[in-house]
Length: 166
Image 1 (cartoon, rainbow, N blue to C red):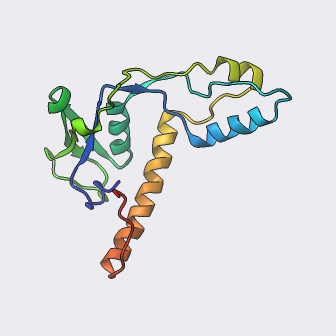
Image 2 (tube, rainbow, N blue to C red):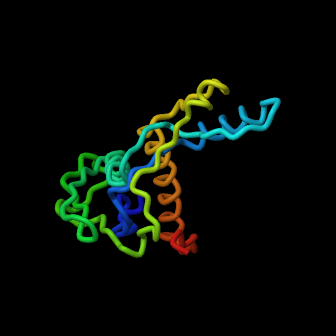
């Protein structure tokens, strides 16, 4: 969101190949509530049961604001470049590097695949996620765009805003 708004040049990430089970907090809070309604305390895995790479989620986030990315290179040399911008509100230079890998963000004990099995929660609680990954990314981007537009307005008018990198 900050890159699309021209407030940041680039984002640095760790392992773009890492696959995660991404879920929406709204679904997880509902699952927690259902767990608390049980007569007997038990352990449940709350997950979507689906996995997506960090790279794919980054592409989805930029697509939400009409920016198409292309990744080139491998490992620490992989970078994401702007291919095209279809939203007139968010225009970046085609060919501009906006995603890079920084080994600083690699986990010391990296797990390439994290995926949960929600079968017990599905069957015993009747819980199933209502939000897919696309809806999660859309909510996140809409929220971040709104926050950062307010921040920019405040900065433009001489006010101090939070530093999200502290």
